[in-house]
Length: 226
Length: 273
Image 1 (cartoon, rainbow over the protein chains, first blue to last red):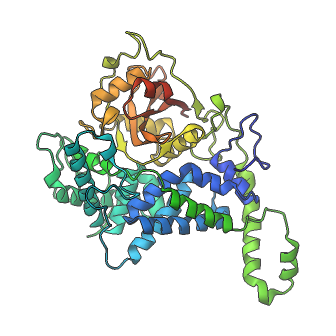
Image 2 (image 1 turned 90 degrees about the vertical axis):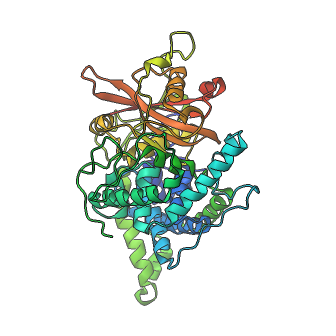
């Protein structure tokens, strides 16, 4: 792994921040960029996989994105965290692939009872109750099917905001659109997901999704969309 | 369907929808994908350091018809690199205990990096004992946000991972965290298993982790901790006399929040500016 190469002195700590590593990369350190990616690879993978809905495409999108980021690291201007910048590039590479796919194909799922694909690491192993495991697996299948029906832009907004926990503002930067557009896409995407997954709903659970006239999704007690 | 702008705040995600989405945690990056990325990155030539002129490139530069694309690329690297490199090296990371890495919220260009370092720590309160960690005091152990990034929170990467999460979730300063606190919780029920199975389970876990009763959970991110199922929980770490948050506390803990998980939990303090 990389050594310190002219970055900020860190005393006894051999670890550098992402920003320091990116600076080292720009200064010619051959290992610095890989170290940044190593730190955040799981999250980058999650974004690519959830956006494309396909492990192979996610892998290809990630490679394309990271090579692009590697080559144009000097375009990073420091107005966001390094990892945010990286995620933006990965999201856009994933969206490019998603948009190029003229006909959506269903994500191959593992055969029943024969284990999981690399992307199907869900709760099953944690659940001792076979029935609960089966229900969880079925839920995952349903969720993926529902996500797969969303238009790419809505899907990306849902992935970033509702699955990855990004702020609407960060998502807007990543998706290069106004904040209100991200909200709108989330509203509409949520509404579609709620509709498609309604059969999974627990009738005893609070906070059912309602769909006001303006199309925004709210929960009980929220009083409708702003 | 149009994507017309909608004003106001985005409402919290419906709890059941949040549960369904969180059930599909993608898990860590597969080894073969990581190997492929490493291979491709290793095939790339290192960037040319700012201020260093490669002699071969310089010779080629004298033959503009053949090497114009190379010349443009190299010039871009040199010019922009000269601007970016110094700007990225201006911050001094805060010292970190236990050899963990340092991290600043947002980026090095942030004005308050001196106070902004994430610092590995453990809560002052003892997680054991009959009084310490009384989970019943944590009334609303319902995170404002429940997500499943699939991150493997581990050791020296934890500060950067937490900083990344907070940065993308917008919780980078007191105003943003205060705003998050005033928002409605993400759910009145919680998805998942173990500590994320219910508000009571989370409150119990926070108590056993030694967090004070007012450690309001902001974010619960389901993923793994050192390769095992677990969650990162971000709470309010400290407040001033006016109730304004002055620090966040993040803890990565195994999903069962067992005694073993509590003992192995990784804590991090993140000062707010």
